[in-house]
Image (cartoon, helix red, strand yellow):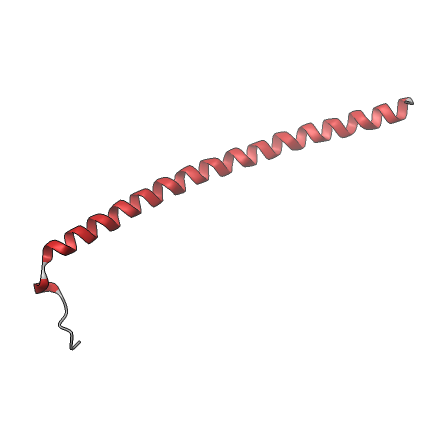
Length: 68
C-alpha cells in the first residue's frame, strides 16, 4: 500500500471511532429515556388500578342511572 492510501484509511478509522462514540451517547440517552418512560407507565398503571379499586368501593349510589 502506498502512503496516501494508509493515511486515507487512518482518517476514515478516526471518523468511524468518533461516530461510534456519538452513537453510543445517543443510545445511552435513549436508554435513560426508556427507563423514565417505564417508570412513568408503572406509576400511571398503579394509579389507574387504585382508581378502579376505589371506584368499586363507591357502590351503585354514585353510578348514573341507565336512562342518562
